[in-house]
Every structure is written in structure tokens, then in C-alpha cells.
Amino acid sequence: MNNQIRGMFTRRTFPKNSVAKWAAISLVVFVMREWGVAQASPAASPSPPPSAQSPAPVLQAAPRSAEQNSTDSGAENGDLPKIRVGTNEVNVVFTVTDRHGRRVTDLKQADFRIVDDSKPPTEIRSFHAETNLPLQVGLLIDASSSVRDRFKFEQESAIEFLNQTVRKRYDLAFVVGFDATPEVTQNFTDDTEKLGRGVRELRPGGGTAMYDAIYYACRDKLLKQPQNGPTRRAIILLSDGEDNQSHVTREEAIEMAQRAEAIIYTISTNVSGTKGAGDKVLERMADATGGRPFFPFQIRDVSNAFAEIQDELRSQYAVSYKPADFKSDGHFRTIEIVANDRKNFRVRARRGYYAPVAQ
Image (tube, rainbow, N blue to C red; front, side, top):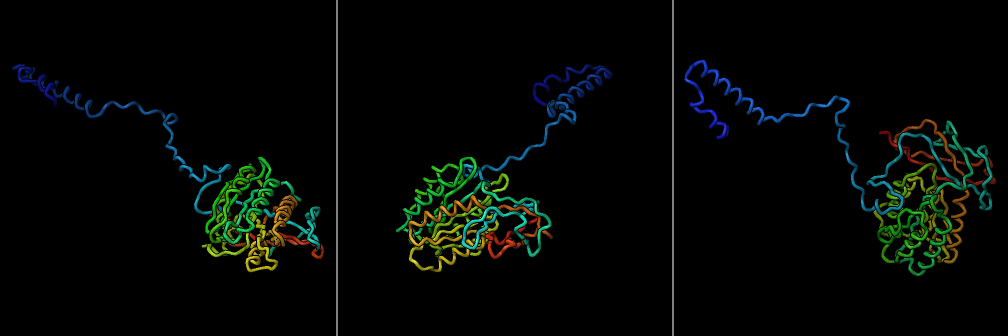
């Protein structure tokens, strides 16, 4: 009790009559008790009815990384690729050529046979001769010292390809240069001027980590880029195919491309006139993902290879089907699409896909 209150209640306060004295004491005790409660427990506002109570706190999303904010399209961030779960529909884009290598674009669903993990699908949900699906393209350019002599011409050919291929508000592309490490000089965008500047920023020098560049482009770019409906994903790789500094293997790079459902087109920069070990690597990567390798005999033929890729990207079929005995177990499932008339038509498609993992 503070001194002010203590001074209010002295012996002079209490009368000598015993009854009056005890009445006064009782009054003092009551006042002191009420004063103490008021000091220790301020009056609380009444609780609102259940329907008017404050909602539970909402967890705030983690801040976006600097790399995320630098993208034109807002790709999602994360350390590991997010594999789509909750669907057993498989989408495959493929190309058909005749015996002379010319593209065939007028075949029907009945002209093909599809086998998924050694069994025919339970249902074909859609089939189209697509020439207008949106593109998500990664342009990977070897900037190691081994390509220094022809680098300028390759840059200009790549810029021309982007100008002719990427459509505003429809397609997206990004540019990665690699020597000992991959470097993104332009993130996803539909702006061909920005893409061109990204290509021109590249400078040759250093070793070659080609497998790392493919792995990075598929895992950290294509797999994290949202898809609004059916989309074609492609990697255009301009390199001599030689690798001397990667941390991942060739097969690991191919596996990541398969997980990203990306077709790899390779353009060899080896102009020696004979196929080397690097050219065989380029063939393997294209074949495993449903792409195509190009081997220009002269450096000026690089632009022709880019033109061929551009035409092929606009002349492909798309099929969507439900596989039989599908399991969300993360295993690799093989795909085989063949023409009924195998003698005259050849189908080029990715070799398979990784089933999503149930959570």
C-alpha cells in the first residue's frame, strides 16, 4: 500500500465504540481489497461473440530471391525440381519424317501406335498436328576457349534464330553461356531485343562444363517455369560436345532434361570435317530426348541448322494419353511412338518420362 492510502487510515480514523470500530475496520478492508484488484487486474473488454472473433494469424510467404525478381516471367524458386503430382495424363510432342528426312505433318491418330512402359494406353485423350503450341526455349551457347575462332558468327546466328522463333506474349526464351560454369545472361522473356543483348554479352574463355549447363537449365529454369496449358520445352545447345569440367555426368544431364520434358537440339561447332567424340555426345543427348543433332560442315551452315530447328518446332504433333497400370512411384517409364507404316515414316520422340512421386 502506498503512503497516501496509509495516511488515510490511522488510529484517529477509528472510533472508540467497539461496534463502530469494527464497522470502520470492515469498511477499510473492503476498500483496500477493491483498490488492490483494480491495480493488479485492469478491466478487460468483453469477449466478442464467436462469429466476430479475430481470425487466426496468417503465415506470411518467404521473401522472393533476387534471382526470382530478375525474371521477366516470375519463375518459382527452390533447390530441387518440383515434379507435378496428382495427374496420370502424359503429354508428348513428336516429329515425323519420311524416308528422305522431310517432315510429314498431315497424319492422323489412327496412323500411329503408342506404347507406354510396354503397354498401350487405356485412353487417348487428345491428338493434334500442332504447329502453334507456346514455346519455352533455353539457348545454351558454349563460351569456352575451344570455340573462340567462330564465336562471333555463332552469336549472330543464334540472335537471328531467336528473332524468328520467339513470338511476343506467347513464347519465352532464356540465354545461358557456359565455360567452366553456366551464366544466365538473359532470363525468361519474350523480348527478342533483350535476348539478343544476352547473347552479345557472352565472351569466350575458360574450360567447358556442358553437362552442368544442361542440368542447370533444365532443373533451375525449365522445371521451375509455370506452364499455362500444353507447352513445348526445348534446349538448343551450340557446342563442340567436349566437356572437361562438369560435376554431373552426361547421363545425369540427360535425366534432368527428361524430367523437364525438354527436347534437346544440338548444333555441333566442330568444323574439322570428321566426327569427334564430342559429336557422339551431342547425338546421344538429342536422341534420348527426341531432338535432333546438326553437324554443319562449314561455319556458315550454323544459321541453316537454326532455321531447320525453327521449322521443326512449328511442325510437330502433340498427343495426350492415360497410361495403363500407372503408379506414382518416381520410376522411369518408357515411351514408344511408331507409325503403322514404318517403312515410309519415322517418328522422333522422347524415350520416356519419370512418373511423379506420390506425397
